Image (tube, rainbow, N blue to C red; front, top):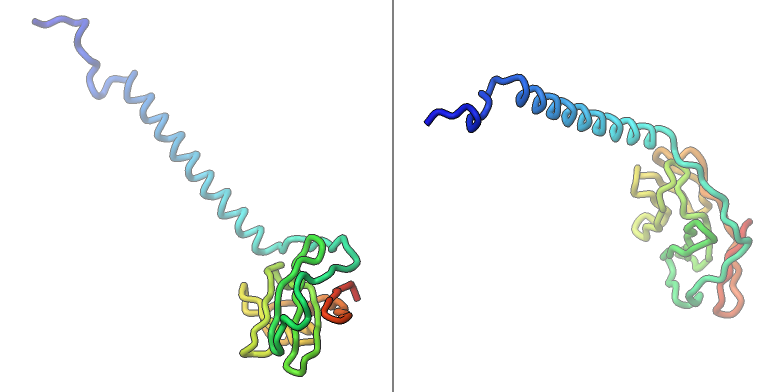
Length: 158
């Protein structure tokens, strides 16, 4: 039984293969374009650091008591729309800074073993006055003023 109506076109026929090849070419082009776009975006975001926004509040009450912070420790808190860091030195003094690294805006932390502030993103180091002492950060951390009344700690802009 040889009927011409039931036969499928040969594998090399122009109608079926041209469409498949075109679709594969489009998919490959879209995939490569997406890959190149994501690589270029990542490189630009790395080379050009994000703009640091100013905290919108003049002062903030810390949500824990002064006695809850042992000597040689640090804690992160919210100062408006940015993180801040409150450090109790080995001598018992309270010092506050913005917790935004001046290199690429990562959040810094206090390292009790080193007794200074450290940025884990690119190994930036700051002393307890906020001055950058090692690593790539170009500027010191912005200082805040820490006021203690009884057990209440209030941090305000310097």
